[in-house]
Image (tube, rainbow, N blue to C red; front, side):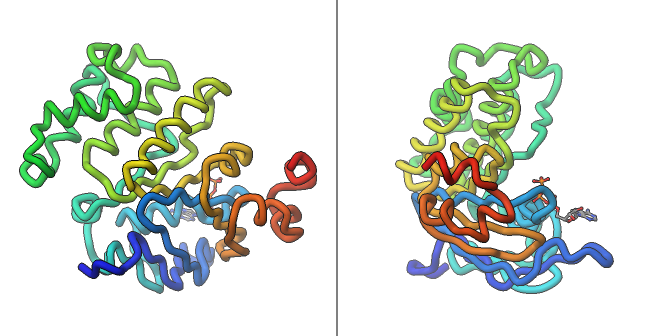
Length: 249
Ligand SMILES: Nc1ncnc2c1ncn2[C@@H]1O[C@H](COP(=O)(O)OP(=O)(O)OP(=O)(O)O)[C@@H](O)[C@H]1O
């Protein structure tokens, strides 16, 4: 482990599925306490990138490293143990179990390595509080609203003590107030030094929350930069944003 290495380094990553090139030579970095937005049209390769970073799929080329440790060949649980965790577009909670149980199961992972010797129960309590779910701890998974389900998804990810959190369209299906609640949680996590990759089609949320935005289209990185700079780039407007968002800036 190299002290100076970025939290996440994605170097010249490619991924092919048969004749489809889902990702082609994509490189970027994420640092501690930084929220990086990853945007692009449908089919751009965003979810594939999460699958590669989290070890669900191997890359066809290139290298991904976490704090300087190459992730190639590691299983998802090993990558999670190194501190990178993702949420899924459609959360699948353990049915027949409560909010507490769903999160506690994740807290048991790496319990023995937890800083300060925090028990799984204490960790569950802490992440439920962070996710605004204390009052719902005894609710069965089936009884949750979409917004609560998303927050359990975040809590489960946090229960593994990540350094890098990847959220995949976590705002989909939420109203404005519910979205704000999630954005506030993510901003709080940034304040704790967690690095976040935020994949989201709600461009206003991306521009509001993120420190930096990486734009991909058809598997290639188009550009990256500060949100307001990226939002004004003609090529980004042309392939993704359209005129409406940029005019509102
Ligand atoms: N398992 C797979 N087998 C074949 N092709 C795949 C597979 N997974 C993804 N693809 C293809 O790779 C490309 C990138 O897909 P991906 O789901 O990563 O895009 P995305 O940016 O996440 O899109 P969306 O915004 O719609 O979620 C698409 O052309 C998709 O059809």
